[in-house]
Structures are given as C-alpha cells and as structure tokens.
Image (cartoon, rainbow, N blue to C red; front, side):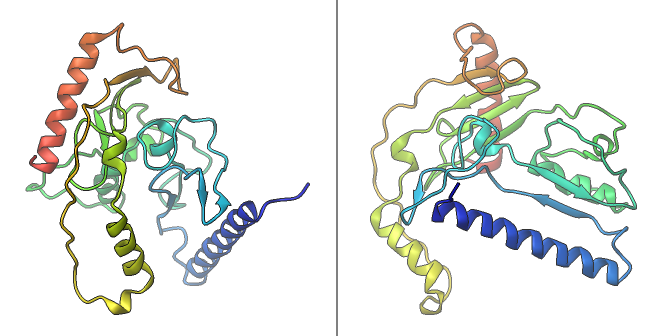
Length: 253
C-alpha cells in the first residue's frame, strides 16, 4: 500500500516530533531533573481537513464531528499527556474535561504556589483529578472564535457536564478578505520587511442572522449527531444566557 505525499508529510512531522520530544527527555535525564520536571504534550485544536497547497490534510480524528476552526468536538477536543514522575502516578487515564483555562491554577498547585488573590480565574485546579483523587471538575466551559471582531452567536460552544450548546458558524464571519490574506502571508514568510505591529482596518461586511443553537448530550451522543434543542428549550435558554454572560465578561462587547 502506498501513501500520498500529503500523508508522507504528516508522518514525517510526527517522526520529527517524536525525535524532538525524545531529545528533551534525554537531556532532562542527563541533568538529573527528569522526575521533577512536568512535561505536557497537548494541542491547541483538532486537525485541519481539506487540502493545503494541493496536498490532502485528511487525517485520523477518532470519529469526532468537526475539525480545526469549529467548535464541534473534532475542533476543540485534543489529547493531553503528562509526565511528572515525582508528582503523578504512571498509567492513570481520565476522560474528564479539562479546559486550557484550568492549566494556570493547576500548574501553580503542582509547584506549590497559591493563585494570586487579585486574579479572577475562569479555570480551576485539576490536580486532584490528575491524581485520581476526585472524579469530576464539571464547571461551565466556553469556546468562541471567528474572524475580525468576535461574535457571540458565531462558532461558539458551552459545556455544562454532559450537555453541550453549540452556535454554528456564520460563513461570512469566518472569511478573511483577500487583502488581509495576502498581508498575513507576507508577514509570516517575509517578516524582515515589516517593522512593528500592523493594524489593518476591519473590512465592511454584511452578516446574515445567525443559525439557531444546537444542543447535544455528549454522554449519549459523543458524535454530535442528534440535536436536542427543540426538546429542551429551557436548557438551551439557560446555556445561551451563560454563554452570553461569559462573552461579555471576557470581551467587554
């Protein structure tokens, strides 16, 4: 069986990552600090599909719905592997939800520091779950992303236990103007020609009304195939209100 060039590039990237992580671990051992060093492997989003420069980006995503860029599970659920021989038992597996906002208080707890009292945090200390001492974190958690000014009704999600509210993408809010696409490419690949921070004006655009929210129960429907919004309107309303409060809190919009 042969592989496409796109698949070969993906395997080459994984091979390089494996080698690089191995070199880090070996260096930690050489300095005698491997057992007391916290090593975390994770990702910022699920895999991208489609094509890039003519190469297929299709890859394994464990059957989750969605991909990089959207707030279905396939876009926001990512692996997490922690090695900390001096603080965590090996072989422990947990399917509990941990959010990126949890890592600041969790890492502080790992190294024995208190959270500054003047900070209002969205995350919680997940160390007891990592140690198998407590089975549930279960706070409300939120996601949202689109191009240009953020929109709470576009590409957003909220989790409350097994319940997940999802606001689908508004296609026009996910697009970048050709001018900004070219500018982004130039800054990435020819940074020597740019000095300081560039702020391009947001293009004028007309957005259609947002599609209605979807509601899933991930315990019964991890693939997010059955929309329960019509059956549970009160749950939808309460989670939408919580999502809006969070959005206003973090954006001021």
